Image (tube, rainbow, N blue to C red; front, side, top):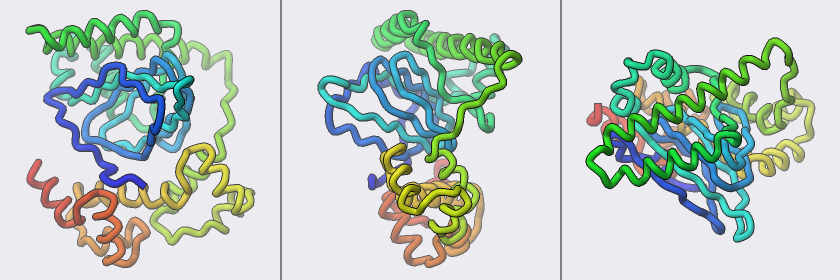
Length: 289
């Protein structure tokens, strides 16, 4: 299990990774970070897990992750099937400061950033050539005096592509009322989301989902790349981070409220995964504010 699941990224106002390629030893892991993230895929096959849903990862996909949102990219890579992507982490307040001049795009960014149960994967394979060129031009602009303007334009171009994709989806709704079946891992994650604050009971989960205990563990590992125990632990620590940031609850009560009743075990586990104690994490967050 990877430590430091929270990624502190220097935004100012964005952090850009251009056409990174992985063809071996790609370690996907659950994580979150303080800004928004846009991920565009050039090559690769796998799944993206976010908001208790799994999305197919393939050429032309664009993903949007909200600030502090737990997500994971699960890709099987090799020399023959590499994973290539460009990534932008950004501060929406700074990079989107002129979006009020474009009310439609401004509303879309607000919806993507703050909405609940929003679509977060957009199939732009038909616009792949356009996206390829837009990313390439933006990358070249980083070495010019127009970087600030070009970065805002780049964000608007991506939002415009997303908006076109959303409208295409919405037009299909009146004539197509079929919904895909949930993956087993999605059903499991939904159950865990409702019960993570309680002592975990695999037998109860299996009974309520009408699956065998061995199959639950096996199918979750196969579909997400993590064991169910790892996922539950990560979710609990993620919720603890939010409570430490947003409330003044005593640390022992926070541990109890996320299903980790022993305060010593909670502190030990938190430090192992985040790299600092709950008390230090709370103090550092208050210092940033």
